[in-house]
Image (cartoon, rainbow, N blue to C red):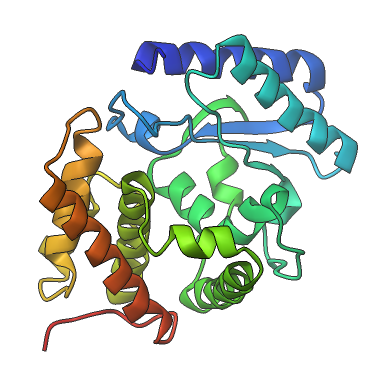
Length: 267
């Protein structure tokens, strides 16, 4: 598979051109976020194209479904080399008052991760189509709003583990890619709750944490996960993989025994 940066932009531009050609009157903005927008993209397994498509509020459910179909067709056209994030919102869904009364399902997952997406837009979002002032009308989530979403997400997570034994078993010995993702995204939440500032760069969170939260309890684990993240093609020795997986489970156990805004600090 071709996971080069050049290929990623080729795929992104194709998606942008198709959706604009078909739904121009509905597309408010397309924003690139994540590693492609902040310059930290490294080709390799587990890479994707993080984009956020914002539609006008007049868009109906069928049109949202169609936008996601365009994403799927684009992926197929490019041999599924690099997946495109299925984050399609109506503008009103990204503005206050935020709606958390949403049925959890794969298709709605991004609606319950709205604070994360808003932080990513404000941290490093690049507008590749549409309203160049879109950031001015998109709110930066407040601490109490983030906490409410996290409480809802934790409730859904526990329900998922209860109803999906396969996922529950998988997390007992998580695949490396999943363990790395859990450790890095959890650290981002801990960084926010410790400092009041967001960090949406998975490649930089360990460095930021070391600088701003000097007594973070899981810093060594975060450093290890970052090493895996930055070297996707490296074959790591088994003892490092075991250490990563054990650390991930320890982190998850710590997290789910405490309040959502708790931060693990050394005494």
